[in-house]
Each structure stands twice: as structure tokens, then as C-alpha cells.
Image (cartoon, rainbow, N blue to C red; front, side):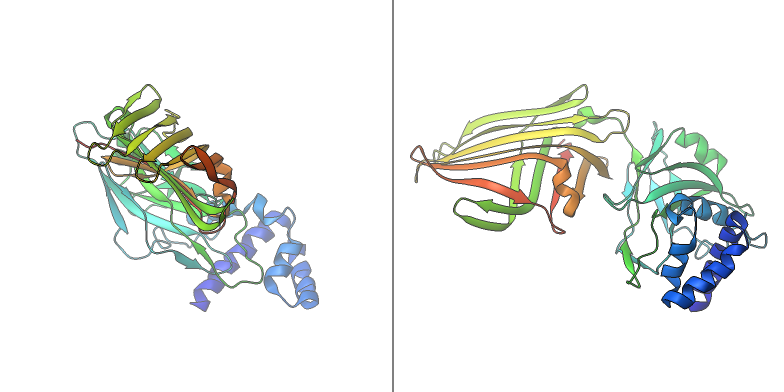
Length: 357
């Protein structure tokens, strides 16, 4: 409601005055009279800028250090956790949540892992490219949240079983470093994905890598080019998944060959680099199509026990793609090829690794 929004902004004003002095009140008002826009007046007056201290502001707020009469648990909506994280699973709120010009998202959850070897770590993954900073808090009845860890990117928390003994539930706080959106009343925010961190990569047998982007071929434009390579059975050795294949469909004479390679950071379980090549030959029209791609830097976005998914989307997708090459030959003659590609809001790159047992 507007009333609750006002309560929240009053907390912001109090924090700024405590940090930057009472003179800011007159400066706010003077600038507001000049520009007739509260958000602009605020942003142009605070010094240091909001990006330098907004994460600290929200931390002070949720832990009850700005207004002493904030009751423990008062910021948590409802009496029950929004979801329970069960061993071997991950969770993400859907659909996207709308925020006002300033806000942060609280994800309140419990953790249960009754497996013989419970997951040692928890990973919280912001929406790729969102610039969300994530903090994890522990909660017990009648007490203010206690900060466990914070990170500007994916947050990995060690000693998860010990934390489950220390706290009854948990809260993930997502904060944009630039929460004000001038000229727009709302912006979209997707909650971080919260998942157990599982180091058992060796069980994965198949991989599937695909990218979607706008492409310019010699023969024309493809506004939604999908480069899609799915492996035959492969294996993980150390930090690397590799699969290679070369087979012929005996009924049609089609031939397919290629490889996929994925290299992992074993500390974070993110993908360091990936590459693939696929060649298909169709004898009925003497056509050979070869697709190659490579890239780096993809975060784990889903841990479903028997499947890991990595990905990124939006205009920043091309930063995770090092190269895409596509050629098509007919009877040995080059007839078409990829000249260039660009990424837009609909673009994405994704990797899926599965245990097919």
C-alpha cells in the first residue's frame, strides 16, 4: 500500500540523515522544488551516491538497527515460510515480481535434507545480468535475522548442516545496487534461485548446449537462430565433461559427428568454458551442415538432482559466446554461411547435463 511505501521511505530518509547529516533534509526539499520529482531530487542530493550504501541500508533495516521498534519477523510476509527446500532440489519463485521505485525482495524458506550424505553447501544464484547482491540471514523465533553471508554474485554458503542446526529458517535478501528507476514506476525482478550445491559431476552422461540469437547469413536473416547440439553418451573426468560421436543411420545413410566439451570450476560448480561442433550429412541432397560454437562463464541456474542447468539470457548473452560458425555445403560447394550474430532481450545460451540412469 502507499502507507507501507511511506513507512519504508521514512526508514530510508532516517538512515541517510544518520549517515550524512541533518542538512540533507533542506537539500532534498530545495532540489525537489527545482526538479518537481522526488526520486531525482533524492539521487542528485545524496553523497556518497546510493549505490555505495544501499546494500548496507537494507542490512541495517532487516536486522532492526534503524528503528528499534521493528519487531523480529515483522518484515516477513505471513507466518509460514514461502517454500521448503528439500534435499537434492532447487527452488525459484515464479512469476516475476513487480517492485516500486525502491525495494528489495525477501525470500523466506526452510531447509530439509534427510539424505545419508546431506549437501554441505547452499548456493543462491541471482538472475544473470540483474546486478542483484544477495545476502543470507538465519532466523529463529523472537530474534532479529542474523547475517550469515553476502555476495555481489552467486552466493555459496559452507557448513549447511551446521547452519540448519543453528537456525530454524532462512531469509535471502536480494538488493539492486541502483534500486531507483527514474522515469518508470516499476521494474521486474526475479527471485534468486536457491539450490543445494552438489559436487557429484561424474554421474552425468549426456549434455545439451544451445544458443538463440539474431543471425545474418549470406543468404538472408534469421531473427531467432538456434544453434543446438546434443551429445551422445560422454563422461566427466576431473573438471571436464567430454563427449564425441560419429555415427551413420543405416536406413537413410545420414551421418552425424561431433563433440561437446564443458569445463567446470569445481569450487563454485559454475561453467568456466564450453565448446561444441556438429556435422550432419544428408546423401539424398548431398548437403553437409557444420555448426561450431564456444563460450565461457555460465552460472548454475538449476540443480534437479539428476540434471544441472547453466545459462544466461538477454542482451548480455553474447558476452558468454566466444564464437559461432555455421556453414552449409551442397555437393562439396559452399552455398551458405553465418556472417554475423547479435544478442537482444530474447537471446539466451543454455547448457543441460543429465544423468540418464
